[in-house]
Length: 285
Image 1 (cartoon, rainbow, N blue to C red):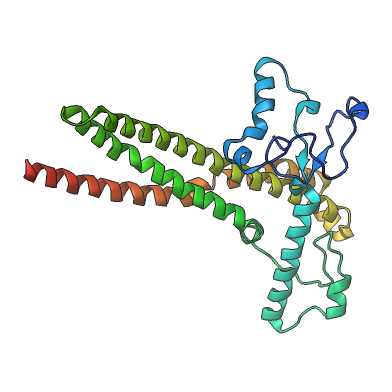
Image 2: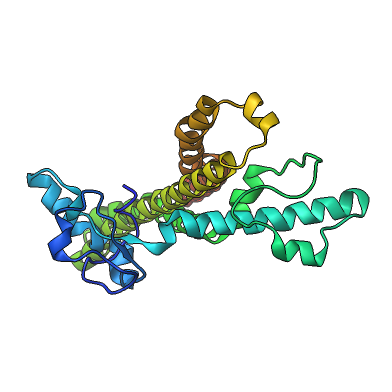
């Protein structure tokens, strides 16, 4: 799944890729690309068609998958998370006791791990860190959600128009075909937007899991003797294998948290609109 999402064709140039001769000896398919699919393929998931079709009649191997985009590497995500963490940490110290990191010290800080020269423990909300790091992706998912709701509210009105066309024999048949075509397109648009919502959130979850895994392992390599006694190796492994998987799952299902109120609001508005329309139609008749 990590290799399937947001990847391009295997022939795309980019970061160094393995050659055809060495591909058989590379079971992990460690190829990268910095080229994104074109707009049409990104809208219709066309860059995954070849893999899906091949998987429908035979077992997919690692060499059959598309190369991984460089944006999904743990290095890119971990550096972004660490940069935001350092900035937040510096602001919290400044707001707490008027003490900030010295300019010379900030430049020399190790950007690979969550270790700063301060004995005081500072807790930073992970939710804030994830939202601040991936807010463009969440915004894209929110926009797709609005389009999905708009397309989902059209069918009841279109069905009403279609019934009027069937009842009124004087109306040309082409109006009925137009309404049926728009009804079909609205359903397809709703399904497409739903796929993009969960696909975008899946991308965020994958980046969170890979980035935090890299940061945690780098941190574990430099634990103090006190921390080593307090946290065992099993705790670190459980944190990466279980907790980060739950973080990824929570990000994917977060649409239920911020999308459900929008659904309720839209359904309530449409219900009131139908009530007003029915009352007006009853009085008119």
